[in-house]
Amino acid sequence: MGGGLWRERFGSFFTNRWLVFVAAMWLQSCAGIGYLFGSISPVIKGSLGYNQRQVARLGVAKDLGDSVGFLAGSLCEVLPLWAALLVGALQNFVGYGWVWLVVTGRAPTLPLWAMCILIFVGTNGETYFNTVALVSCVQNFPKSRGPVVGILKGFAGLGGAILTQIYATIHSPDHASLIFMVAVGPSMVVIALMFIVRPVGGHRQVRSTDGKSFTFIYSVCLLLAAYLMGVMLLEDLVNLNRTLITVFTVILFILILIPIVIPVSLSFWLEPRAPEEETLLSEPQKQEPHRLRQDSSELIFSELEDEKPKEVDLLPARERQKRIAQLQTKLFQAAAEGAVRVKRRRGPHRGEDFTLMQALIKADFWLIFFSLLLGSGSGLTVIDNLGQMSQSLGYDNTHIFVSMISIWNFLGRIGGGYFSEVIVRDYAYPRSIAMAVAQLIMAVGHLFFAMGWPGAMYIGTLLIGLGYGAHWAIVPAAASELFGLKKFGALYNFLTLANPAGSLVFSGLIASSIYDHEAEKQAHRHHPWQQNWGSIFSGMFGVDEPLKCEGAICFYLTSLIMSGFCVIAFVLSMILVYRTKIVYAHLYGKTSAPRLT
Image (cartoon, rainbow, N blue to C red; front, side):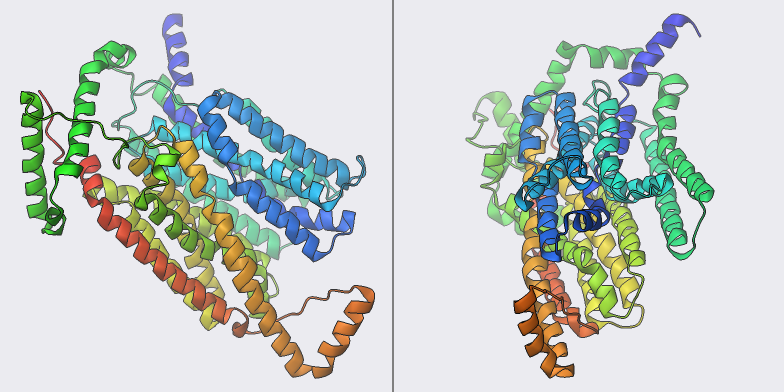
C-alpha cells in the first residue's frame, strides 16, 4: 500500500462517522458524574460537619446541574462544538476542583449556598458532554437515531459504575481523592476527544455494513453490562485483593476500547468508498437537484396537512393510505402545473425543523414532556429512595440494588433504542409506542414494590430500571424526528427539565411525606412516650434524629400513586402515537410521497 493511499486512509479514518460515535461513547462514559454523588456526599458531610438536611440541599443542586442544560444547548448553536466541550470540561474541573480544595482544607471553608453553586457548576459540565455527543451523532446517523441515542445514553448511565471501578483500583486511604478524580479525570478525557466528536461530512445514509457494526456495538454493550454486574456483586460479597481489582479494571478498559475496531476496519481494510459516491458527496452543487426534490416533497407533505379532510384519519389504515396517496398526487400535479402555489406557512409542520419557541406552542411537544415527567419522574423516585425501600423490607445490603438498577437502566436505554428503531424502521409506526410499553412495564414494577412480596425488590428493580432507561433512549430520538435536528440541542435540554421536576414533586414531596407519616405512626404505636420526649430533646439540643419505617406499608401508597402516574403517562404516549402516525408513515413508510421528475 503506497504512502499516498495510507495518507488517504488515515484521512478517511479521522473523518469516519463511526470514529465520532465511538469517541462519543467514551465521552459519555465520563458524563455519569451525578451518579457518584452518593459516594462523594459522605466525604463532604464528614469533612465539613454537615447534617443530612444540608447534604440533601447539595443533592438538589446536583440534580439541577445535571438537568438544566439551557446554556449548553444555546452555546452548542453559537460556538464550535469543541469549544462547548471545553466550557463543559472547565466547569467540571473548576466546580469539583474547588470542592476538593475546600474538603481537604487547601481553600477556606465556604457557606452552604456557595458549596451548592460549586456542585451545580461541576455537575452542569456533563450537560455539555451529553449535548455535543447527541447532536453530533444524531446528525451523523440520521437514519439510525434509536440505536445511536440508546447506546450513548446507556454509556452515560454506566459512567458512575465505570468511575467507581477506576477509583477502587486507586484505593487511596484519603477518601477525598475521589472528588479529585471526578474533577480531573473527565476533564482530561473530554479535552483529548474534543476535536473528534463533531458532525462530519460524507455518507450519512444506511450502509451495508451498518447492521453488522451496530450488532457488534450491542454485543460489546451487553458484555460490558454483564461484566460490570458480576464485578460489582463480587466486590460487594468478597474481600478482593488489590491485584485482582487491578486486573478487573484493566479488562474493563479493554472492553471500553474494543469498539475502535469498527472505524479502523472500515477505514483501512473494508468498504472503500466508490468514486462516484465520493464525487456525489464532495460537490455540493451536485446535490442541489436532490435537495430540490426533497424540499418540494416536504412542502407537499406540509400542504397535505392543511388540505387533508379530518375524516381521513378515521378511516382504516389501507383506505387512509390510499386516500392520502391520491391527495399527494393531486397536489404534486397542481404544483407542477402552477394551478396552486405551494406555500410556506408561518411555522413549520411536524417533521420539519422547529426552534424551541415554535415547539413550545405545539401540543405534541407538551405530550412528550408530561409523559416523560410522569414516567421518568416516577422511576427517579425509586432510584432516589432505593436504599430506604430495601431497608424497610429488611434487606441489609442496599448496594446490590443500587448496582442492579444501574445495570438495568443501562440495558433499558440500549433496548429502548433498539426496539423503537425496529418499530419505526420495519413498521413505520410512531416511536412513542415503545415509550408507552416502557411505561406499562414501570406501572407493573411499582405494583411489585407496593405489594412487598418475597423477591419483589429484585423484580421491581428490574422493571423500573428497564422502563426508566428506555425513556432516555426513545424521547431524544422521537423529538428529533418530530421537531427536526437544527435546534436539537435546545429541544433536548428543555425536555430534560422533566427529570428534576418529577424528582422534586414525586420524591421530594409525595414519597418523603408519606414515609415520614408512616414512620411517625410506627414510632407512636410502639413507644408513645418516645415521640413527646424526643421532640423535647430535639428542641433543647438541636438533635434531628430521623425516624425509620419498617415493612411494605412505608412505600405502599407511594408505589400505588407512582403506578397510577405511569398509567397516565401511557395514555399520553398513546395520544401522541395517534397524532403522529401520518408523520412516521411519511418519514419511514415504504410507500412515501412520489418524487418530482
